[in-house]
Amino acid sequence: MPRRRSKDPTTDIRITIPRSIHDKILDILEPSASRSAWISAACRDKLMGTTSLDDASSKQLAVVLINRGVITQTMYDLITDHIKIVERRNSIS
Image 1 (spheres, one colour):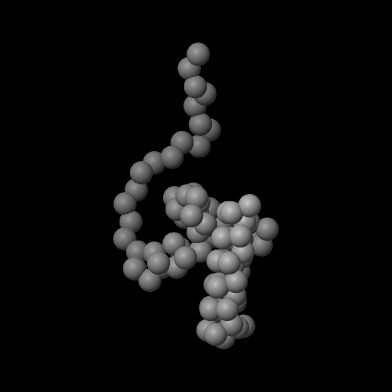
Image 2 (cartoon, rainbow, N blue to C red):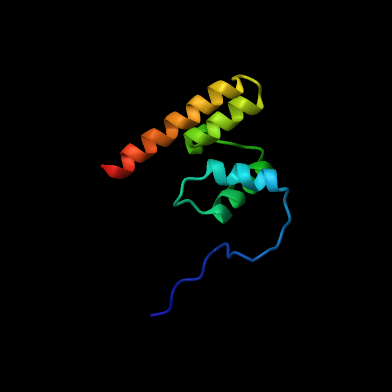
């Protein structure tokens, strides 16, 4: 039995982005997350003018706070260190 076709098939594209943006994306993504899916969601949200806090990871929220000047670099570093510790604990259990 053949597989059903996607209602919205994907297409390969090649883009160039600054290394700093690439690095921030990698910092935000969980190890098992799809970079393509994240970029697609970001494009969709931008085109639709919507974002969802429910979809944001702790790392993404920390990045937003530092970028908006709500927290200092020191606080950001403490938060991301804490996130890493929690992720390690969760991966062990």
